[in-house]
Amino acid sequence: MGYDLVIFDNDGVLVDSEPLANGILAEYLTELGHPTSYDESVRDYMGSAVHRVHELVRERSGAQLPADFDETLHARVFAAFERELRPVPGVEDVLGVLTARGVAYCLASSSSHERIRVALRAAGIDGWFEEEWIFSADDVGQGVPAPDLLLHAADQMGVAPARCVVVEDSPLGVQAAAAAGMDVYAFTAMLPADRLPGATGYFGDMKQLPGLLGLESQAMGM
Image 1 (cartoon, rainbow, N blue to C red):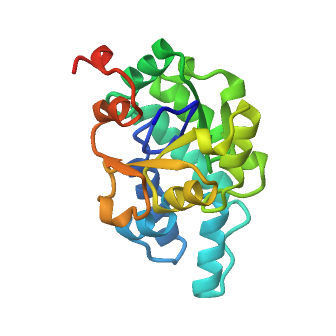
Image 2 (cartoon, rainbow, N blue to C red):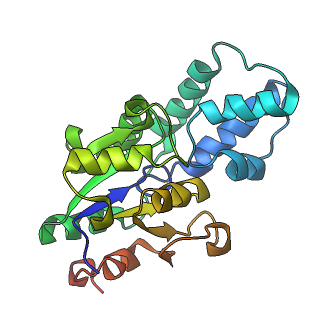
Image 3 (tube, rainbow, N blue to C red):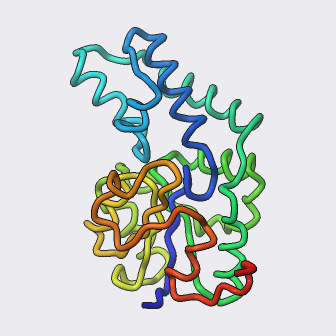
């Protein structure tokens, strides 16, 4: 079916930030006395807001993370973004196809507005997004798996949830889309399909996305 609005997650879908961010998070938690491997960080925190890190550490250890945890984590992540962050291969072609076909799109992420903008700028794709097309968990008070952020984005863009499709790469994001009553295509670059249950469909290369969305794909050389 065709859609009136495509809602993109940011980390791992638009920008190739998940390996960087999860490596830094695992290292920082381990440094603070909460041993965490990269794979554990991906499993437990990928796609979620930073409050989930506080909640799981408190639940598992009874300890509170330092008061400056968020500030320090963000500083380390932002520095890595400025040095190394790149867009997900092929995503600018997808945005070009959507623009050419007149299909509305926006970004909805559990990250803060600051982190979203740092990531888009560092990856060089900030020009694809107007300010009013960017939505953060900051706007609604909680991130995925709650559907609130996606419903807020749809409302602000003036599109009914049933006419929206979400592009996600995390289990929590897929859950949120389903709870919002939206179709969701899961990008399997980081996690295999069996770790992203409940999606409408799956794809491992951005070149496949326009076809899944029912759009012509000649603009992508296919």
